[in-house]
Amino acid sequence: MEKNKAAKTPQTRGSFSGRIGYVLAMAGSAVGLGNIWRFPYLAAKYGGGIFLLVYLVLVVTFGYTLLVSETALGRMTKKSPVGAFQRFGNTKALRFGGWINAIIPMLIVPYYSVIGGWVLKYLFEYVKGNAAVLAQDGYFTTFIGSSATVEFWFLAFSALVFLTILAGVENGVERVSKILMPLLIILAVFVAAYSVSRPGALEGVKYFLVPNFKDFSLMTIVAAMGQMFYSLSIAMGILYTYGSYLGKDVDIEKSTMQIEVFDTGIALLAGLMIIPAVFAFSGGDMDTLQAGPSLTFITLPKIFASMGFGTAVGIAFFLMFFFAALTSAISLLETCVSTLEDELHWKRGKCCILMAVVMFAMGTASSFGYGIWGGIRILGMQILDFFDFITNSIMMPIAAITTCFLILKVVGLDKIDEEMELSSGFKRKHLYHFFMKYMAPACIVAILLSSIASALGWISM
Ligand code: PFF
Picture (cartoon, helix red, strand yellow):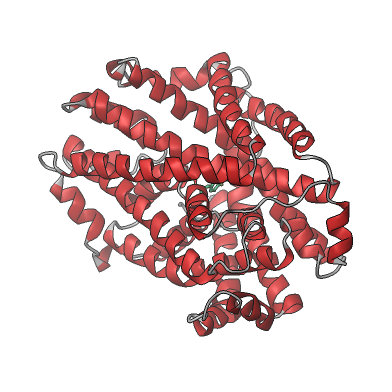
């Protein structure tokens, strides 16, 4: 059966050159907007050190379980999500599971690239020496309201993503990650060191790192769980796809741990860049810290402008932010293109053209959604916010449930063990089984219900 399918595929499947290439590409996927703007403000909002502690526990347990599951299924089947699910049968449930995992990145990559365009625009302005302009009141709102400008930067960012994908898995995705990820770490360490050394910043470091149990609430767990999904690129088909490019000799257990360390390390550094700087700037005002997404595009430029070397720090920060967004967008688009290659049996170039049309249409809608199409509301949300909500809050938990269903009810845990044991001793097998059977389904349902409750306004997140 495998042979038949392979014969229908027009070219041989791409692959990573080895473990380092895979780990850096997957770390490139995981480290993204989520680490840099989402993690710091959630940590600030949901208890600082205690949020961090809960987050770390979830990453090494629940997160580890889902990462291993998707990667092992991808490598076992050598297919992107749709093919991976259908390898085990052609029932309605399996078709649904495959397609929901595959459609999520198709919905995310257009709006993610619009935000990537915002980052590119800010980087460009810093390089031009316009740090003071970016810090002006109302700059961000005026910018995202200028539809033609936003569209231009969205297209510029998307062009870079497509060029990488067209170059292939090893020459494009892997090579770009191998160059950008080490640079990203250097920039992150530099900006974090600068931020924590500002006068008054130490209070922020303490709030961020030292757990205080009185700041704990149920929402700490719910928010940490949602963030873990987002940050590790779980339930969006990426791990299936990257797993399918993985050699049978690559140790999935070890690679998964390294990806987790990378992703969490950058999230920690992002917290150290942002929380202490905001503490120093605002004198510890919690409202400023909890401003949410606007923290990065509104508050930070003000902070950079008010401190020494603002332009240099601004360039370093937005360059790092740009690298993070670019490598994540690459992984999202690679998953879409790979699904189309597997399912339509078209050449990569033709699949890229189809995705370019999808991305142009949906990305333009998101670009214009804060400007000339500002009047349009879907479920009361602006277009970009709607895509973000429907994917992250509704579809991703459902996609994760389908993966649990596939493993527990169809494939069987023993088959996953076999796949893992091809390349490692699978030391955390018992933890994996426990989480897969008892914790993962319950945690995922909790995420889904809390997202719906929050959307309906029953709880505030
Ligand atoms: N894990 C990446 C990030 O943290 O930004 C990629 C990503 C996550 C993209 C979630 C999109 C998304 F909805």
